[in-house]
Image (tube, rainbow, N blue to C red; front, top):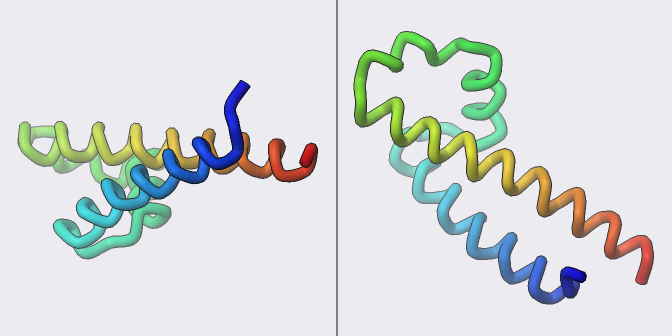
Length: 78
């Protein structure tokens, strides 16, 4: 079972990684993720550097959503 303080720590570490991408590409993660998942960034698929960064960034966004959901569930229980 995930302990609440571990989850908070994981979210903090994840946030640091997301901020790095936000600074590099000058867009907030939720806006990026919306554009990525809707296919608006497909023009960048031809560029390896962008493609790899975007895949990693999207995975981090999805992980953040999952951890935030777990946090909400644990907070309600405690």
